[in-house]
Every structure is written in C-alpha cells, then in structure tokens.
Length: 112
Length: 112
Image 1: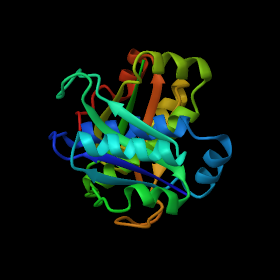
Image 2 (image 1 turned 90 degrees about the vertical axis):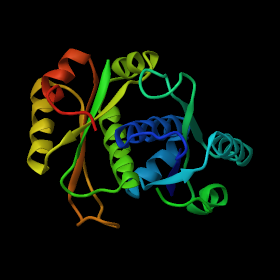
Image 3 (image 1 turned 90 degrees about the horizontal axis):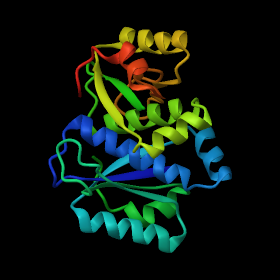
C-alpha cells in the first residue's frame, strides 16, 4: 500500500508551500479512502511518495485516471492567500491503495 | 483554526522528503484531534503552515508543550528507508486548534 502525491514544478512553490500543499492533498485523498484501506496503509507505515507533475493538465489527468480506476484521490486548489492565484491547482494525491494500482497512474513521474 | 507543522532544517532533507514528512505529521496530529475541531478546521479551509525547527530537541519540546496544553500533536520519526537513519525525528505537527493556542507554541519559529 502506498499513497503518491504529485505536485507541480511549474509554479515556483517554495519548500514550505510545497509541503503544505502535499499535506492537503494527502489528507483529502485519505478521507476518500475506505476504513479497511486506511488501516492497512497505516499498519504498513503509511508510505507516502512525492513526485513531480509538469503542470495543471497532468494533475487533472491523474485525478481523472484515479477516478476511472476507482482509487481514492484528492486534488488541491490553492486558496490564494499567499504566493499563488486563488484556485490554482497545486497537487493531487492518489491512494492509499495497492502499489501496483497507484503505479499504473503515477509510475512514470520522477521523484521530487 | 490552524495546524502548524515544524520540520527540521539540520538534517538536509530534500524537498520531496520534507513534504512527505510534513504530510505524515499533519495526518498524525489530525487523527489525534476531536471530531468537532476537525470539522471546524476543514470548514475554514484547513489552514496548514510549515515552519523551521533547528533540531531534534526543538521538535521534542514542541511535542511536549502541545501535550501539556492539551493540543493535538503528531511527532514523526523516519522509517529510514531513504536518506535518514531509522528513528530520526523529522517533523511535528500541532493542531488543528485555535490560532492563538498554536501560536503560543510555534509562534516564534520562522516560516519554511
């Protein structure tokens, strides 16, 4: 079991901003996950992997593929209080789910 | 309401590693938060702020102060699969809780 969070590299987020957006996406997808998968993932150490997405379009594609495969996902749009325009999509999380299922969607993306 | 996550600056975490550790800490503290505070925080846009901690000792101090004040917290120790020694404390989250309560503990730390 793992959760992969893809974050955009093209909008110049600072390190702290990036971390906060990744955490938003992670929690959002987690809350769309059924209890059994939540438990399994936590028992296994709640593996999280952060990868690079090239832009907005890639984030939406990931979210759509996750939905099509029935995997939990969480797409985050920034509230725009700092750094970014309101509504800017910043990150998307897929899982927790089986490694192979998540890899089908995000397996080609480079590690952040 | 906000959640503040303090992450160490002295162990050379890469950007992706930092984001994953912050997300771990965020979820851990969230799960120690009562339902009412969880709901309030989410209704207000689940504000998360990432700040810098100078080292291990500061993380433990933050976790202890949160406990003493009755605020939810989550301290993360790295599993050590990559980059760090197993058991290395990396980040601690405080809240979600009232802004003023969180600021009493983390208000002096610089933004990441």
